[in-house]
Length: 169
Image 1 (cartoon, one colour):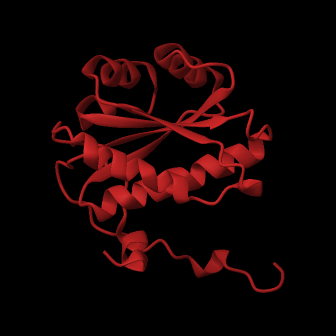
Image 2: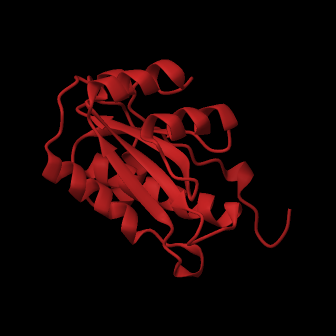
């Protein structure tokens, strides 16, 4: 898939067939997160790939926007190492860029995925911290549900010329 086309056609997918992707495919998708730019090149992103049905169910049950994990077959937790990048604004931007790379890789592979926000909601952060037994240095920023989509979603043109400004507002 050509990159511009991939950006324009990627959509959030929240309904999956439940088919579990193989470990090699999941690892190749996660590796794309390491190619994201980071502030000062500190590379604070860390990932947990998970497929355990109990974990998927617990997250779907305890996080408001994580229902798609129930049928996804796999998930990816994206975290920031605050020892590598202590500034929240930077580590959120860094991990967000990693999440976008991963979502584009999922789409390019013919799968579906959705970004599930965790940070900055304290309740969501605690649920994830407890479930994955995270050390204090790791801040969970987002989750990704991914897998085989139940159906294809049509691309939507979201360009809005009223929100593009030249030189000043």
